[in-house]
Image 1 (cartoon, one colour):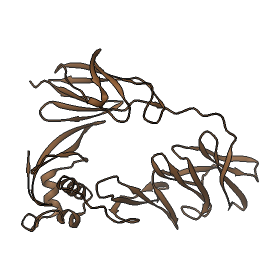
Image 2 (cartoon, rainbow, N blue to C red):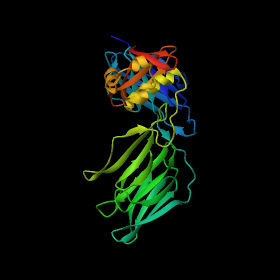
Image 3 (cartoon, one colour):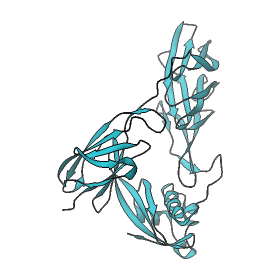
Length: 341
């Protein structure tokens, strides 16, 4: 039976880390500590008062259950990556308490109006402590919608013809990037949220066109639409590419290997083949690569030189992933061979 070993990570929050009440070390050192192969291990994160932005971070404890050396149950409050040799990477996500600001007078950021059922409807994008949209049906002297928009700091509201003739589209920016909210008339006479996306968006007849940054090595973007299907708004499967900017090129051999795997995941075979040698790429298909790698979720890590080891993550359970490693043999900046580690 293998002895499980925890590798503890906390991103952006300086903390003390404990396992089963014993000090493991500071988060910046990413401590590694063995635990019992059976039973529960309790991991506690004790933040040093505030995070990098000055916000208060709450202490956190997560319970991990092991059976015969393997983490076997879904976990909450963290993400787990399981290696075949018993090493388990635990990425903790402590709760951040937003900074408290002095109460401010509400400020109207943007206004728009449209016609619905023969009378005017007015939308106002407001900022007080948070940003929210209020839609007024003045003909019936009522509020048709009041919606708090998470993670938005600036934005604008406009009347659009999209899923209906009387929609409002809110677009803006927040701490996590572009935001888009589409409001449409509801059957009950009010308004409803048809889409709330962390993406840039454009209203087109019959569909909301969304573009989202993937955050990968080459800066791919995912493009998808939200349209009415079976009476409800539904998102289409995304297509990947470079829609509003150019491709970012890998800067070294390690990034080449990571970018190759990400291109395979996005089913961009031509892009994937551009990273391999002519000999390796001869006759290589997307089906071949899917069969070889399997259904991985993401590129977890890449390291080494001159041969490069890439760790791929595969879904195991809620917030839990298994890691498989592959060794890439390089010829300069091209991949000459790939083999399981």
